[in-house]
Image (cartoon, rainbow, N blue to C red; front, top):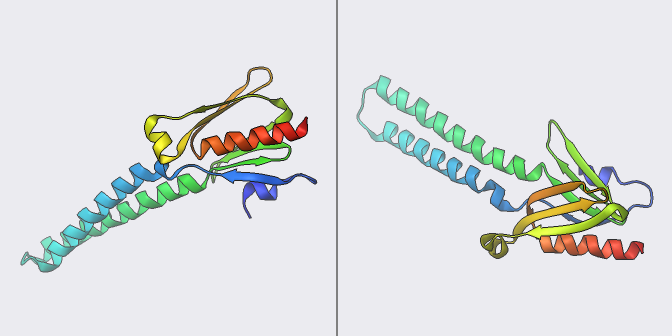
Length: 164
C-alpha cells in the first residue's frame, strides 16, 4: 500500500495523485545505457577476439562490471521517481519523498494561500513543472519536476472551493 493511501485520516478521501515526471530519470537512463553498451561491447570483444586468456578474463570482468553499473544507474532513476508521492485529498495536500529516510509535507487546504506553477518551454511541451504552495504565514513549499502541474493546481483549487 502506498504511503499516502495508508495515512489518510477517517473521512478523508484521496482526490488526485501524481508523481515526479519521467524526465527525472533521463540522466540515469542515459548513463545506464552508455554503461550497458560499453559493457556489452567489452563482453562481445572478449568472446570474439583472439586475445590471451588472462586478457579475455579481464575484459569479461570489466564488461560485466560496466553492465552491472548501467543496470544500477537505471534502477536508481526508477527508485528516485517512485520514491516521491504527491496527492490532493479533500482536506490537505500531501507530499512524501524518500525511501529509507522519509520527508513528508502536509498542508491543510484551508492554509493554502497561493499556488504557483513554473514551467519552462520544454517543461510545457513534456508536461512537467514546479508547483509552489505558499501557506498562511508565508511558508513556501516548492515541488519540482511534477508531472501535470496544471492539473495538480486545478485539483487543489477545486478542493479549496469545496471547503468554502
